[in-house]
Length: 515
Image (cartoon, rainbow, N blue to C red):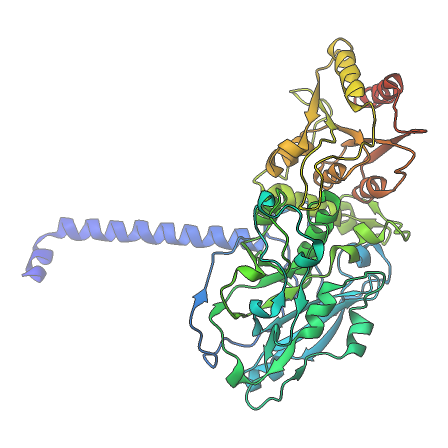
């Protein structure tokens, strides 16, 4: 009967054919669009050849989350393959592709034959640290001594720092060694001394984590949960301080690129710190966030990446050793590579902005239509962490007077429109802070961690730092140099700034911007 209806109704048949042609057209159009999108993306880093997933380790549960893709960044330059040559102590070695020596502890090909896990480290002779990664690694939170982590600050006031830092008992981390493997340490102390040296870090928690990993027999490798997506293990120290957290963000970002992760990884904090507002950026940049002690039992990771401490990044090392690098546009470096220049901090800043959904392809016009924003980054009293009294040490004793003087001066001085923005960052979300930074033509403020936000500033942003005699440190001069931003400083004899001096310096800056 159906056959008769179809043959007797040629109009219906033509409609079906037309519909089929339309569907095929849209399918072809969609396929072409995907091809053009991915073919124009920057070249991916060499991805490690991982063993195929096997069912040799049955699990009681498996978590699988949708991972965020990497955004398209104007300052992105390809992260090179493991065999690429990068000159020792060049800018690229410091800020990007310096992790070129690959140390195969258990090669993926060997792991594939045994059905067990694999492990390798990427060592940077320039930074003296390693990014390590591995597959089929189990974490047992019950054997990590530290506080739970992720609590509300008000619930843990007075808690000691030692309670928040991890101490690893035997069996805290294990790698699936396959069938018939005797339990032993994955790496020796000699290996750690050469490739994960403690240096001047008094408590090197990542070295301790890597040193604690044991190779276990497959029959003892029981997991309550499997995490299928690549996962980044991070340990933080000064987690409530913006400068130190930016070094952690940078280490996490570089580690993800060095290991060639196709998407943004998940995060696991292997520390017991409470929650702060800075977690907002962690969550924006990566695909998910959990604390190690929040897992209910042993959890196994298909692929983990162990990020170096923030102390081992050039952002921190540059405070004590000379890193003679200057920021430059990525396009210029693509055409004319230069060992003394870098676009990596600009790439990183764009990553932060893109993570919050801000456009990263915009470049500030000489005279913005809505006027120039002068962002005054303020220091406020707020409760930062459980051992903090809530009072912020003053770096500019007459900060309010300076702000009020600038406000009065700007109200009747310039022909072009100029807006003075009161940067009360302690009471702003991280997204609002990043928005204020990217909209600023000039960033001014006393020496303090809030100025670290300049990593997300647009090209041609001008920095004016007010430095008291007790805090003559190069943090922000260096970041401005490495990003290629114009930088000015007012060095005080004490902590008091003459408003007239600040106004004069700012007046010269605004003239250079055409006002």
